[in-house]
Image 1: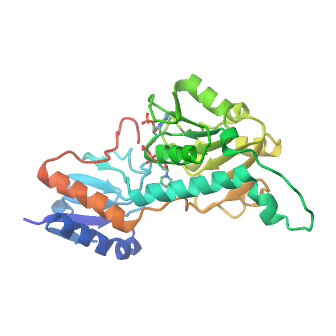
Image 2: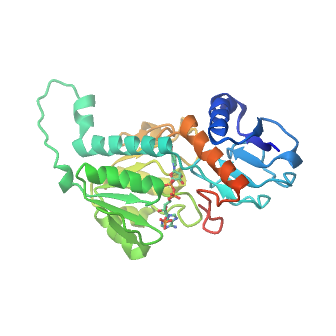
Image 3: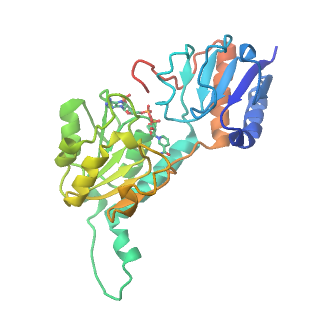
Length: 310
Ligand code: NAP
């Protein structure tokens, strides 16, 4: 019998995902009805984006799993009507995109590129940056994206410290955990990259006290989630000159309102949540592999731990 897969994301996403999902289904030999609309009590799997119209899962009585199109799950993980396994997106394209965005912005700050790009004023100013090996970088979050970015930065020569909830062992990376680990990770960070998920524990993690631990002149790159940072504390640290620059891709309110002080701040770069996108062809394969696993009675990949919130 064919499995019924509901595509519960914004309709414009359907145009992007329909063909990749159908190709991925035929690649693994799963016969399925894949549709934008279907009777709730017929749905076996839901391909889901948290901005979907579906917020109450109660009518989906036959549902076996929800397969999220996004890596971040903060808008669905606490939904009490969802009682089946929830998988988040782990996708080669998403990871590679994040590695490219993070290394690009870290190199921009490390090399001081802005001085030559934005100040073509006829003055011959020679500023020689240190070598990467003399520029300690810290990555908060050592999950799929944090590890991939840490390894890429380490390959470029940066001494990389990574921090996460559990103690990890990643070759070439100084791995830390716990409160003392966070303190040490911040104290050494000339460039700080945030790749934590948003949970009740990580909200406002980068507050005034922790910003003060960073070395004077540190630069921050945040492609994680906006509420990881206390915005007022960051603006204060930027205005005081303690933080030299913040490149922010994610915000408490998105799109970032035009009047928000970040837009006009000379030491802030705003990018519109473009650090990395789920790539339909590779992501469709990940989603359909989970459907195949569900039908074969095998464990799902990339399950969210609802108790931890990510
Ligand atoms: P992941 O694999 O789940 O990794 C999360 C990492 O954060 C893990 O290392 C985890 O520690 C750590 N962590 C979670 N809570 C913690 C806490 N309370 N204290 C210390 N460490 C904690 O997630 P991912 O795939 O790397 O994605 C990370 C985030 O990137 C996503 O949640 C999303 O918000 C963001 N993202 C942004 C974009 C964009 O375009 N801007 C795109 C994709 C993703 P453990 O290692 O101990 O589990």
